[in-house]
Length: 124
Image (cartoon, rainbow, N blue to C red; front, side, top):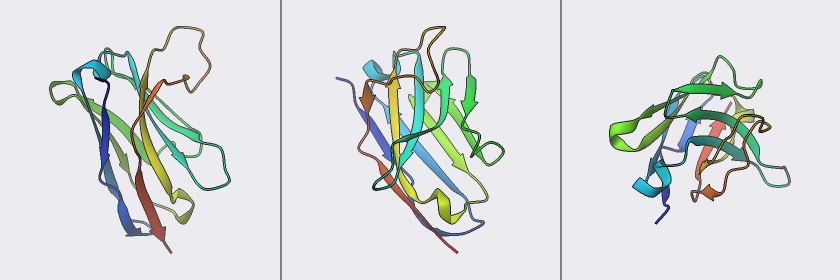
């Protein structure tokens, strides 16, 4: 079974930090790419950060570079998204995703498996 479970969302004041976690089933973690997306009502889902767990390579949306860090703990089948310097515009539902990436794909990859999402709310 491919299962992804996010945790770590919540409400925080601007300037604060959060660490989101995505724990994947063994089947989900066999995909070579995982990522974090966010979405607000009325807007398209936005790719935030991606990682290739087999080599640790990461990529970020321009809007979050320098503030967000994606990392993995392969022993725990877990991918993290550490968010620093939170801004009100970071408020969104954050989703974890898994899927196949191949050279030549656009960024972000077209992920095939998604978690339920975790809400992040930032107040000014």
